[in-house]
Image (tube, rainbow, N blue to C red; front, side, top):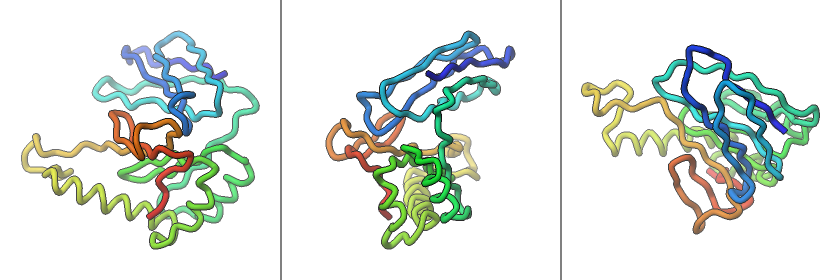
Length: 189
C-alpha cells in the first residue's frame, strides 16, 4: 500500500494521484490533500501525480512498502545500456521514457521491442520520432513557445502514452493519456 499526503501549507488545492499500469480495469485514482491517503490496487502499478497549474508548488510526502521496485527512467542522451541494465537488475514491471514532448510508460513485455526499434535505431531515435510528430502537430495548430500573441502560445505539457489491455478500439486518445489497446506500448519508431 502507498501512503501519500501534500505537506506545503501554502498549497491549498487537491492533487490527483493515479496508480497506472497496462490495464485500465485495474487502475485507480485518489484525491490527495493534507491528510494521509492510502492508495492500493490489485495490480502492479506506477504512481503519478497530475501536474497542477497556477496554484503554487505542492510538496509530497509518501511511504511505500519495502517490496516496491524503483522505476527505471530513460532520458534523452543517457546511456541506453545502463538503462536496460537497471531495468534488468530491478526486474521492474514497467519503465519510463521521459522526453520533452512525450512520456511513455513501457511494460516489461515491451522491453524487447524497445531494445530493437528498427528505423528509430535506439531510444533517442524514438524520442526524436515523437518530437518530430509533436513539433509538426504544433505547427499545424499554430502554437509556438515563442508566439507573438498569447492565444498562440504553447504550454509546456507532455503527451502521456501507455498500453491498455482493455482500451477502446485499437488505440485511443483521451483527456489524460494516449493508449494502444494492447499489453504492449507504442514503442515502434
